[in-house]
Length: 111
Image 1 (spheres, one colour):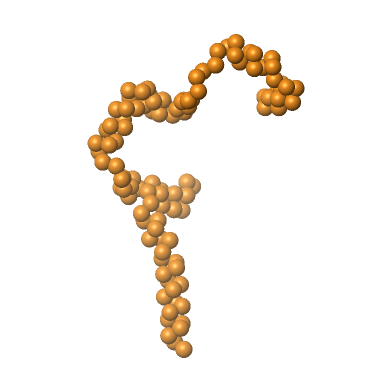
Image 2: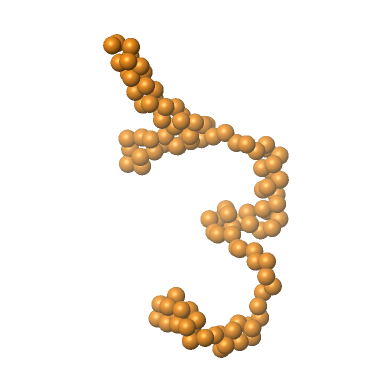
């Protein structure tokens, strides 16, 4: 009768210890503070080499995205389509159906 209890106790201890082991590999750990977490950068494991990171930084510097990222701004979306002229946009708006116009105006307040 003691053997099943011992196995159940071991399973319970393992079940409680396993989440703590996985948190040790994370850079964020729970804490009893207002923030609720603490940051441990020494636990970070990168999959990239230093040369790969330097190459990425140089390419971001050349295309102008590094400045945007440093200021916390969003990166512009690169479209695969050719840009429309002003006249093309005006023509599309004049030729839209009443249902399409109503749907477009619902997207904007005051429309």
